[in-house]
Length: 152
Image (cartoon, rainbow, N blue to C red):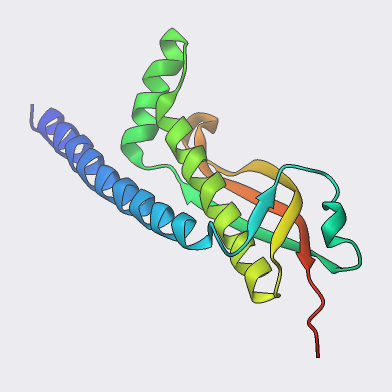
């Protein structure tokens, strides 16, 4: 009986602290997305618009590694028994994607870029948990930064 109480306590603790960390991360992401919205445009095109020809280009990257908390791993394990969407992992990947894009935008802005074209995302599981469940995921965002020439 005491083992069950410990298990439930750990699950509840993992849930509460995991939710707090996730909400805090989302607040940070939203704040930074708003700040970068006007600084570095993300263009859904492969080549830059004609107005930007003659500018300098540079590869920019941003990477984020996010770990799965114990509660999400447990819920995902249950979902694997019955099938269906694993929504606990969807928020994990959403946060990782958005964080990687923000880090890429920050590097582009530091290089003087006004936009990034040809944005690509790569996702990988970089560590395995118990029973080959996902332990951590990495998302790499990369694209071509368009850096306008500065007039002397």
